[in-house]
Length: 126
Image (cartoon, rainbow, N blue to C red; front, side, top):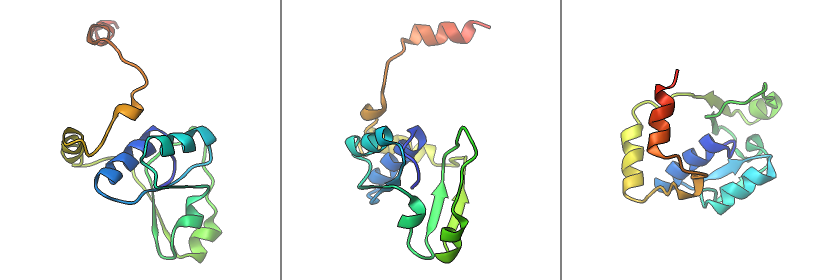
């Protein structure tokens, strides 16, 4: 999978919880380290199009702050598929169950805590 930002890391955590070997493609050193230290990446690579097997499928589940570039020649020469998705349809219940069964550990992704009263107060403020 491509990217080890918040979406990529949590997607990888769910895949690991399902028993899938995860290979994450990431360019940023800090994000590579988080993918390894959180235990969700079996392998971390520089570019996903180099890693995908001929005829393989690359699924992008992220959004960038700027337009992304794709080496179309690598995609075409390997006859690979590149797919994009933004919605997680009908998957929430299964993922919640995996968290409840400790198949997915969310602790590595908690960076701070917000008191419930602060959440409810900010929701009431226009």
